[in-house]
Amino acid sequence: MSEILKNAEVQGLEKKPYNIKERKIKNAIYRSLIRPELADTLYDKIVNIIVVQKKYRDPDYSAKKLATELQTNTRYLSAVINSRFGTNYSCLVNEYRIKDALHLLTDKRYADKNVEDVSTMVGFSNRQSFYAAFYRVMGVTPREYRRTHALK
Image (cartoon, rainbow, N blue to C red; front, top):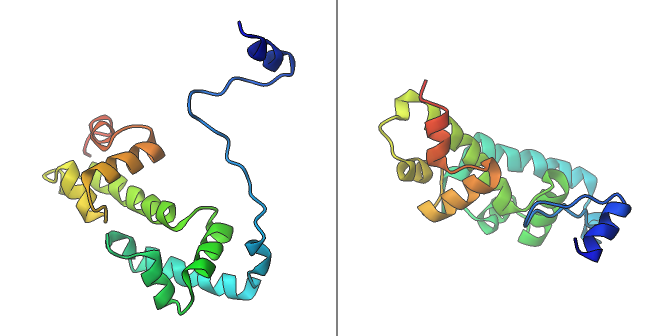
């Protein structure tokens, strides 16, 4: 056993699985520049546009388009998304796409749709990005998920 591992065990540090890092909470200066009232208003509008209006299904809907629609700039929008949702724009949108895909992959009304069709329906521009995002969130591929959660 290496000296580093012995020291880690002595200090009570546990060995992390390969390539898994703990998320560091950044104390970014821009967060103090966000006006809470405006951030709350933007949060509600973001949820309305991305979730209620299901703009996440549009592969061409970008942070820039959202910022324009909200009459703000992308830096401020990014700061609000980061502070209120705890993630960035792409991860936020992909989270809702994956949630939608989970439903479509297990709903028997969509049993005739292949995984690539589902990825297009939820807003991914290509199969590779869908598989990568799905695996990152769920830990299995969309095909494996569909197989283990047999169509009901």
